[in-house]
Picture (spheres, rainbow, N blue to C red):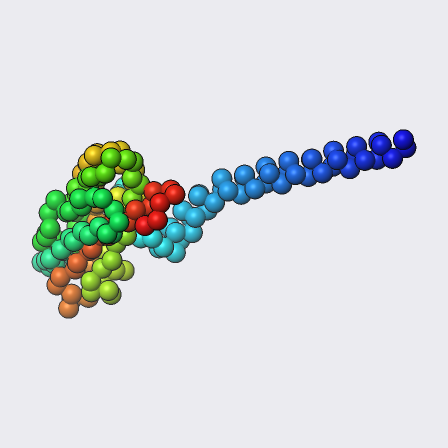
Length: 181
């Protein structure tokens, strides 16, 4: 019977170790989202290297106009309608502009979607600064729900003079948990 207290102590240590491991894994998982956002903001990953609107200080060049085109596509497995409200804008470099995109869920269930932006010409990407964009977060739509979503941006005055047209193309992907996109 002298081995019984020792066995009980081992079980208690095992349960305590497992409980601490569980708490540690939960804390790590919980911390991953803010850590991921910080890494994305620092590296520009996922288009999240953004300035806040209240810190916007670019110099406007009223003599230089650039055409900005907006395109919208939907991944083939996403039951969505997706389009820009304005397909094209004439903008002055350095000036803050806004546009919005319409997205509508045509399915009978909830859908979570994420937009990914691409730019043409590709070298223009580093000169497009978004202060607000639906592409920064995943958006969840209820059955047959639709909405207009904003994007606010400016073109950096350092945009090469040879670039007169910038195309911003958004593709919406299905990121609903448990579904393949």
